[in-house]
Amino acid sequence: MATGMSFVEAHDFEKPALWIGSVEEFLPNPESGIVYWRSRRDEETQHGDSWRPVPEGRTIPQAGWTHGPSCTCEFCR
Image (tube, rainbow, N blue to C red; front, top):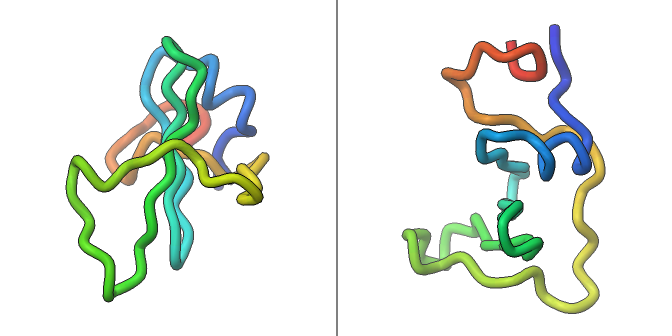
């Protein structure tokens, strides 16, 4: 079973990748180089506009990136 991509692989892949944890998500934008972040806590609203650049002091995960549950690429299956 695949364990996902490294951050470098996720950033350089032609398809958008996500890192999804229990309380937060990360989304790199390869075109701009900016990595976006949002909270997954129940008390915070999640929608398309809830993504923000990674807050200062927050560490970007270096492993476990995927394209989502329906992806069948070599990293996600």
